[in-house]
Image (cartoon, rainbow, N blue to C red; front, side):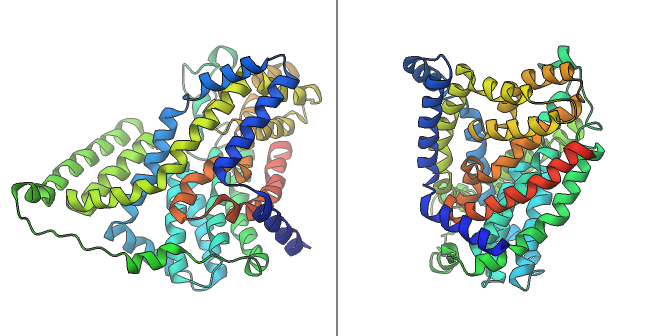
Length: 441
């Protein structure tokens, strides 16, 4: 039964799910029409909301583009290649490969979601070379499944926001320490359950994956065929500068000194900027010369195209959702059918739906936070639990939202339809531990 359902989902996705860019365009049309027919917004108003919101994610788009570029640069250094290759040696069978990639990606996403996306994809590339018989589509889906836990980990934007003095809802709810959110019994239950059972779940998907369409990783052939040599022999003064290890050592060293100072002053603050900064300057150091570094950069930027062009469309969708009142209506619909006991679960479900249209944790909290926290106090629900219900809803539907797959797929060289059928099954299964944690722990 399980195998048949998985194969069915995979066939449907393979046949009908469009490219990630077309998905963003279709989602734009859907939200545009919903705003016209469900709210009192006119077509002209919806166009204005869309256009005005179009560039609201520029900073975030740049951060995610750099995650892909700097991650690729770092991974293609000889030192990191060696480390990942050695770690991949722990996998000797396809089943072990699936479970190992899932564990590494999950723990990496608990540290930082951007870090986890890059490491998961890069590690999958190394593991498939160690175990070439593994289904690469499922391997990459397993790497992406680690994103399920990110909002319950150290980079969770909602719990970190409400723990910070001066956050925008402080007058309503004060500050809530991470001991009541990230390190609460219910959140630890969900995270630990995911860490233990997610690798097993992905391993169970192998039977269906083995009989499905397989894709041979193109990069394994490219690595052998496209190994270009770089002429390091200086011919001019400019050549000597481009091949200077001293320049890379000095600028790389200065960058890493700043990284150390950052963590000394701020603790384990792994935000996207410091992750990119660390990857960038480690890459400069490990490639040894500016010429080798820039050669890798030119290869890396090809992977960022999807992010650069698609994120503005999602920003436009978010603008229509917020300004038309669609996101408020979705949240309030679930509030009407909730009581003190069921409110955490319905908050989770409403956040999951809103996340499909507003795929940004911080952006979603800005939209839903005031509505849900006001209702929590009115109903008598636990504020910390409701905040984490929004966080888990945001993380849950990432499994079927192409927005977050873009960095990972760019590195893996796959399309969204290649992994989404497996992600649907992971989404359905993961509802159970999340619901149990929010309702009963």
